[in-house]
Length: 282
Image (cartoon, rainbow, N blue to C red; front, side, top):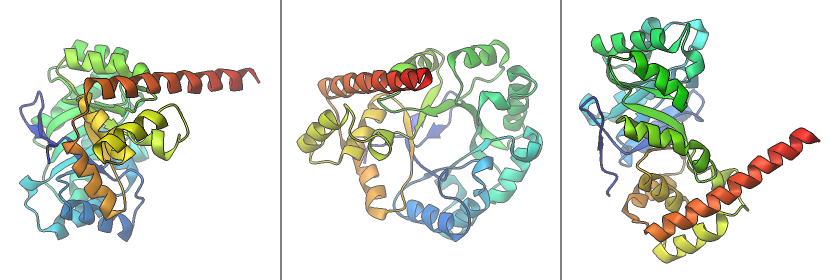
């Protein structure tokens, strides 16, 4: 299934679809779900300090029997419990039961204390110390990236952001700036138009395109995200859905398909923005 790995500016490769642990909570549930993802062909697991399930992710990795080099592991510095980056990365690799992570992200620019250059220098040290093969950012806007690149010795490998058709126009400058600077975009919450915002302008083109391919609307959204050059981070507790998401890698949308989704997304974005404005006036 052609979810090909993508080469990062660090020289390492990232699998272009990953299983995220954001919504899984803790306890046995996330252990079982990460194991299920690994068993069904996901070789990229995305977690974070603030998800509070790095330990469970580590148990699943160990119980899978997979070699460390067979799984791409991402975690994030979330500033949890007020801990700094040097302490947090050591805690994270310990919780995950690994000696290094493949990708370590700053979860948000607001965590860059006292400022972005100081924070990024600490991230560069994480890479230099061998605790992360690649380092990156999450939820950084264009201005945040400009500040970071102004002092960086090592460019961020990725910027993980909210990305789906209803926010595409808003996020497009981030995608363009990242592309100009060799930074890969990772997309989270790609399925929101279906799971949280059904009944909008996207329903019609998604249903039509899904029917054409004999696919689900979720698969079409993931194929759209892939077509934008982004790595997908998604999740599900259902085995059939996980398998369906992998199969979405086989869907090659036409330029017309992508344009139809873009147009409906822009229309939906305007409606959401107008609702926000009207709500503010009421």
